[in-house]
Amino acid sequence: MRFRIDLKIFLFFILFYFTKQIQTYSLMMIFAIIHELGHLITGIILGMKPEKIELMPYGLTVSFKLKPEDYNLKVKKANKLECKKIVVAFAGPLTNILIIVISILFNKDIITNLIILYTNILLIVFNLLPLYPLDGGRILKGFLHIFLGNKKAQKYINIISKITLSIVTIFASFSILFLKNFAIFIIIIYLWIIFLKEEKRYVIRNKIYDALNDRDIS
Image 1 (cartoon, rainbow, N blue to C red):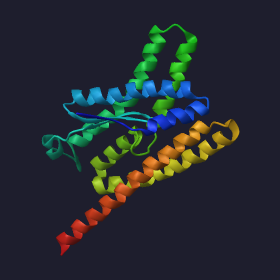
Image 2 (cartoon, rainbow, N blue to C red):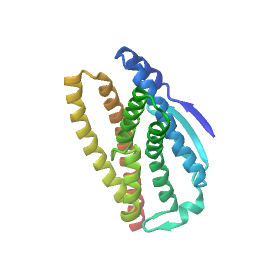
Image 3 (cartoon, one colour):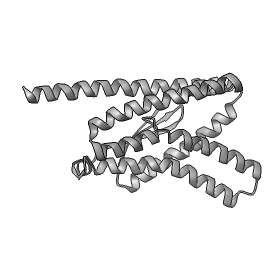
């Protein structure tokens, strides 16, 4: 299993330091890492073997090795692997919900509870946005893959992600304008970078798919 640190994380720490939100960012990173550990543990429970762990500016990301038996077992228009991916994606937000419940039950300090509640709700809402490759986008893409097939799933999730990110950008713009919260601006820029990378991969995959179909026809 490989481990990698994305050096952009240090840039984020610097930017949040100068915007005077370093404590908020540090706390969110801690809970984001716990969130990703939820993905990791769930994947291991489901028999998936971790291949690579990366420390990114928004937490950890975990990738798993493919098992041929999961990939070959059909589930409607997808496979067993896609079902496991959906469960693993759900595990992250559920971990944040579990943190909130534990804090409310066992932590009697109101201020600490409010901070934990606020931070984890932000992470839940953020990660459940129907924007690929966030958890919400992965979950939606998984269900679309099962019922519509891979090609249509990729097409629709690309469109939905673009619409979602555009709406989020509009609301974030008002937040930046009225609340002067430039940390949100940094996050939105990073989301657009992630999305554009995924869109580029989608275009390349589509061209390969079309080329293979043309070869089969000829």
